[in-house]
Amino acid sequence: MEEQKDLSQIPKKDDQVDLNLEPNQTACKNCSKTFELGFQFCPHCGQKAKDDLTIGVLFYNTISNYFSFDARFFRSFIPLMFRPGYVARQFVLGKRLQYLHPAQYYLFVSVVFFFLFSIEAREHTQAVDQALQKGFQDEISTDSIPVKPLDSVSKAKISENIKRNQKLFELTDQDAKDLDSILTNVDTNATPNLTFSYDRKKVDSLIAVGAPEMEQLKAMGMNENAGFFTKRFYQQLLKFQKQKGGGILQAFYDSIPIALFFLLPIFAIILKVFYWRKGRFAHHLVFSFYYFSYLFALMSIVLAINYFWDMPDWLDIIIILSTFIYLWLAVRHFYKQGFLLSLIKSGLVTFVYFIFVIPIAIVVMVVGSFLFY
Image: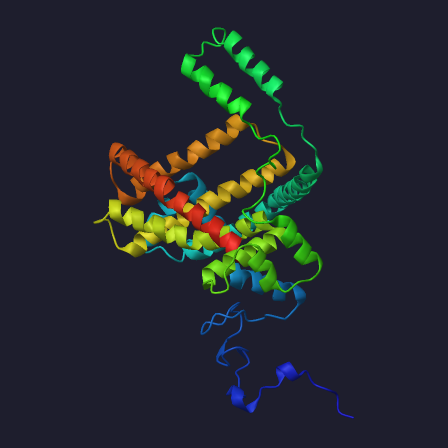
């Protein structure tokens, strides 16, 4: 029998490899073009000349291609963290192979941050789920607690004590009258206001017997002709009751990366408004990508440190303030304006973003988390 040959070394007909290679030449396995021996990479396509497929090479290529995790990452990290606005300025000026692409940098550091954040968030979600479950159980148990109503004698004693201590607490006649009215007219037989605006006991009974979902929704007050969003709201409210609130905080956390996908370009739009004549929108977007990358990198470092050592509150406050100082210096260097004007504009950008954009985004995230968790 003939000795089996390595199939990877046999050129196929479609490869169009020159079989008459010179002694000092080799053929690229990727583009099939020839080049002289001694090159580490193919001068035509850039693939490594001797790229034997091993487990290490396979996973390195995966990480490198997906995150561009190469020397440019480390070359960009130090100036990104300690030279505000420098990397973004250099990238806009044309030095785009020296530093990692802003979108790729943002992708990598955001993945690292949310990985670390998920470890910390797991404890919070478990604590909130347990608190909600306990709240549902306590709400049910209060229905069986007997409460003795106030009789006329007890009400008279309360009124007398209020009048006697009116001067002690510096209450006016009207204040004393209002307080007396509130305390002596409390309906102690009323169930604590912890329930939703429907009969939870009835809904729990329908859930227990396996009634159709439409019957459960009707018991909650939904009309048969309800629209899509109204029906969706009642369905999620029913799910919230079935799960006793479990998973609602995790759904909110899961919405943060999606929200940031929209918040980052909005930040760039605000920069465009304040720096209308300072470049195209793409330039402001580059600045935003690098600035958010800095924020994610800084928060990742903080989360990693807190995992081993609980940082004091005063240090957390300093770090938060440093992010604004970084923005101030970054816009000053990137847009080439004075310190005072940069301070005013960075303050206005921060004010608009945190007073108007962030609150609206949080409301949308809360509503979206409830409707789709």
